[in-house]
Image (cartoon, rainbow, N blue to C red; front, top):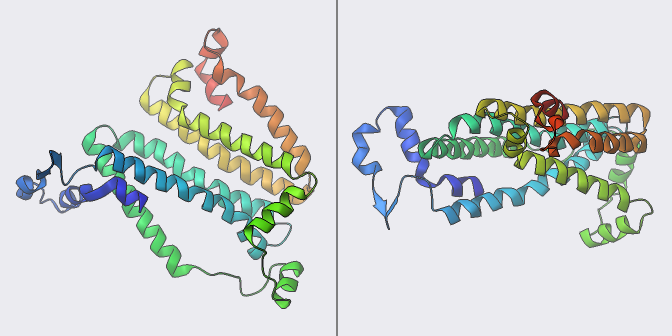
Length: 270
């Protein structure tokens, strides 16, 4: 819904372009309602609402992977499977850096870009509905088999939240996770300003740097998840990631020194 709110009827001229008949309906395409093009981008408030709806859906995708891993994968596979499912959200963001940076170069380009996202998201949703399975044919672990045999039902959400926060040691990893998400989102949102301050001004180079940043999140999550599955060194890996982040994030904020104007160092830090 959010994607289609951002696209609106702007997909109509894109569709006519693909058919090669837009010029035949030029006057129709220029129809205006209340001084705005009917077959163009929606009003800005509608685009904002659509963007907010898309953002509201993101927590669902971020909360689903642990449940997916618990129900479909064995205990020595869950960290990797969670990393793959959770971090592949970043693949879409990486594609947005490259595709969006190329397509959204003006009004018409942004119109085509929003239409493309709406169509692709609709196709992905239909494919998911058609292929969705709630549980695997065979439970992946003894614990899941036991739950199935006992007809286990998950407690209400508020009960789970209360249980989690009453568990010793839960709050600190949660805080670390919140900080990591905040850092990646802030860096991703302001990648253009960060790269320009570091001496990278080419638009295409900035787009590919942003793409590399998101892909690094995916690959890092998969590799570290595999390592944790094998060694069970969750705490040590987490602390190492925090320490490295503290070091590597420094060049992103240095603007008055030579160190902060080195594009190669900036990209490596990302």
